[in-house]
Image 1 (cartoon, rainbow, N blue to C red):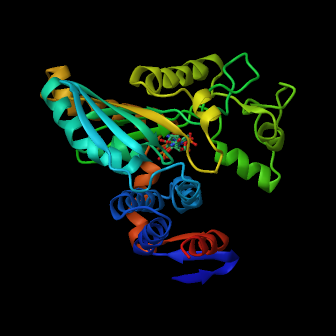
Image 2 (spheres, protein in one colour; image 1 turned 180 degrees about the vertical axis):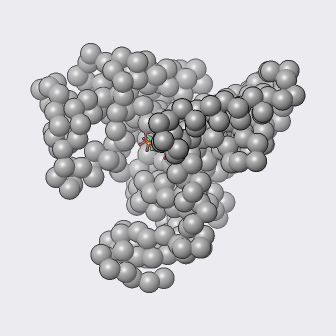
Length: 345
Ligand code: NDP
C-alpha cells in the first residue's frame, strides 16, 4: 500500500477487500455479511465504479452504528410460487440476501422461462449491475430495479416523491461478458450533484430545481431545499414511477416517500425493496440461435457511428477497467483511506 502524489492512496484489490471486511466486522457485521459486502465493494473498485466502492463504506458503518441495519441478519429465502422467489433480508444489507436468492431465481427462470425475485426488508447501497451481470452469466437476461430516498420531483412537480431509482438490464453474449446497462433514473446521480457542489461547478439545466421550484444550474440550490429531476422529462419520470411501483407496492415494500419518512438520515441506505426479473431466451424465443441474433444486433449498433468506436455498449467501460485493475491496483483519496482506518478502529 503506497501513498502517491495528490493525496491518493494506492491499493491492490486484495487490500480493498481486507479494508472493507475488517472495517465491517469491527462495526458489527458477521463474517457472512461482511464478506458479501466486501466482495461487492471490491468488484465496484475493480471496475472503477467508484461511487459504489470504498466510498460507500462510511455509510454502511453509519447504519450499523445507528442500529438501523442488522449486520448479522440472516436472509430467509421463500419459494413463493413456481416463478417467484421471495427473499426477506431481515433488515440486513442487500448483498448477502441477493446471493442467497440468485440460485433459486436462476433455477426457476430455467424451468418456467420467466421468474421474479422480490427482495424485501433490505438496505441497498450498491450498484445494480452485479446482480444482473451474475444472472446473465448463467445464460439468462435480467432486469433489476430499486427505489431509494425521495430526492426527485415527478415531471411537472416541485416536491420530491421519487428516489434516484436505478434500473439495470443484462443480456448474455457469445464469447464476451454480458451487455450490462445500469443507470439512475434521475438526470444526474446524486453523488455527482454533491461533487459539483463541493467543487463549485454548475450542473446542466434539467438536473434540478431550487427551493422556489425554479430551474437552476446551482448544485447547492438543488441539494439545499431544492429537488432533483428525472432524466428526459415526462418519459424518465414515468420510468421512475414504474420503479416505485415495481420495487414498492408490487412486492409489498415501501415507496421512496415512505422510506424517507421512516429513515433516520444516518448517511446510510434507506429501507426498500428490489425486483429482479430473469428471462430464459432459449425458452421464450424457441430459437436455438437466439444468441447469434443478439450478436448481429450489437454489431449493427456498433457500426452505426460516424467513426469506429463512436458507439459502445453499456458496461464496456467497466469491463475494460476490469482487465487493468488486478494488475495496476486502484487509487482512492487519502482522506477516505484515513477515515476508513479510523472507522475500523
Ligand atoms: P452513468 O450515467 O454513469 O451510466 C449509466 C449506464 O450508461 C452505464 O451502464 C454506462 O456503462 C452506460 N454508458 C455511459 N456512457 C455511455 C456511452 N457513451 N455509451 C454507451 N453506454 C454508456 O450511471 P448513473 O450515474 O446513472 O448510475 C450510477 C450507478 O448508481 C448505477 O450503478 C446505479 O445502480 C447506482 N445507483 C444505486 C442506487 C441505490 O440505491 N442502490 C441509487 C441510484 C443509483 P459503463 O458503466 O460501461 O460506463
